[in-house]
Length: 107
Image (cartoon, rainbow, N blue to C red; front, side, top):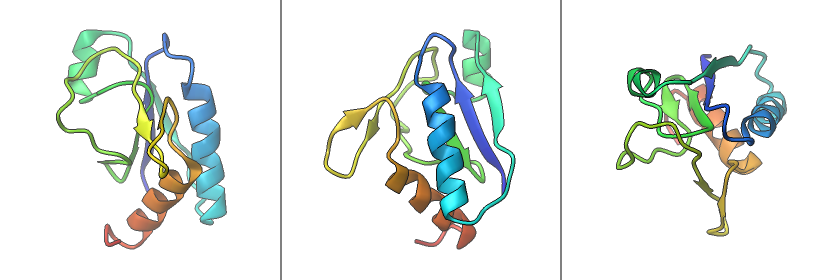
């Protein structure tokens, strides 16, 4: 399984996002190294299709796609199950994304 975390260093939430991602992987019994990529330039943001920090992809799929956003150096938000916006994805969202990938993309 390919798991990526892309981040912009000006946004402080990437370290906690990595911890949550590793926790989700552990809960789902997946042992894999997370590929962490630092995005520092607008060119890199465009090349990596980076919509903000942190961006988490499992098997190339965004855990919470937001296709309307431009590629840029910025922080991002996630929508939690209760509708709250947060700079971090919920553990539930992460676990569901891992399970989805394990099931071949079928929910």
